[in-house]
Image (cartoon, rainbow, N blue to C red; front, side):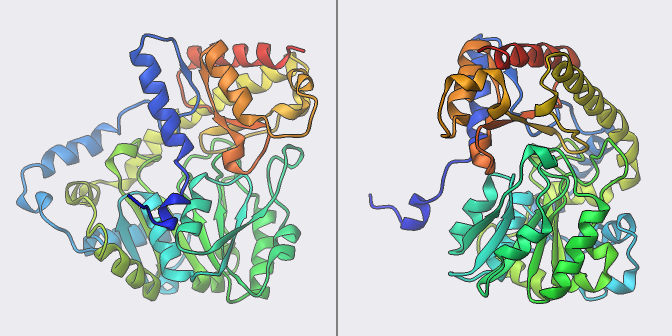
Length: 403
């Protein structure tokens, strides 16, 4: 059967494929250190599970919700956003929220609502693997701003400015960042806000899925907090996936000017219809103030794993390959400056080859950096239990030290 050019051009999600690979290898009896995971290895907090149990008794939990989600939940999410970003309610008077089937779905809807074929969308490398595929799906072109380990993978605002053309419609900013595990500083956000004032027609999709998972101060700030007028050109994307350890429950949301969420709702209404009613009603019934107590030990755990990583790199004289991760679940290993890399002897991207070797020889599953826009690197996750994480990092460093 002849497939459409649109679907033929879409790449498989490498993170989804690797997660399936880890499950497959484990079921075969192999010992696998899965450092590819973008999810917490724990259940959601008991208070949320209790709300799910409670909602099982109600008929509406099994029936359609409005396409954009229950109105009461949308209002709750909008208020939570205003409170946590320290924004007055009057600033969001003409804003709304739309609830979707995960943040990936929200991103599809957001880009579908604002970009046309032939438009350009700026991405900041490293970027989440799905961004380019969504952009191409809607007929637009991704334009990449590069960064490197020397700057802790924080792109320069001047480099963004140089990439803007008359075709530039939007830019996606992901802070805290997947895959680098850093969030952009307040100074960076101030400089970015000044840049946006030069481009009032440029739409910013602010992917804030990891906003609550910062384990080193100062906490993330955002450009629209610095200059409130920039809210007019902003779409914020969030989800319960990371903060509630609920990736499989597929509930995300976007917050934006009402004309944008209405457009997103039209797309959603003709594709998936409303999101999961049971999860919506459970979240509506859930007290979001419980999040802080739930996330505190998780942040502490990730910070301890990050500290172990730092010390092992220093002990192995690989400090020049290390940077301070501060948030989210991840760290990017730069292979290009390690002793192991010398054996390749050329300037090609060896991310896939090295990742395959780590899996086949050491039983360690990582995500090749090529798919994040950073060659000769890999993303590792910091969320697994302390002992297996330490064993995996020790194996990786031994591998990196080989000539």
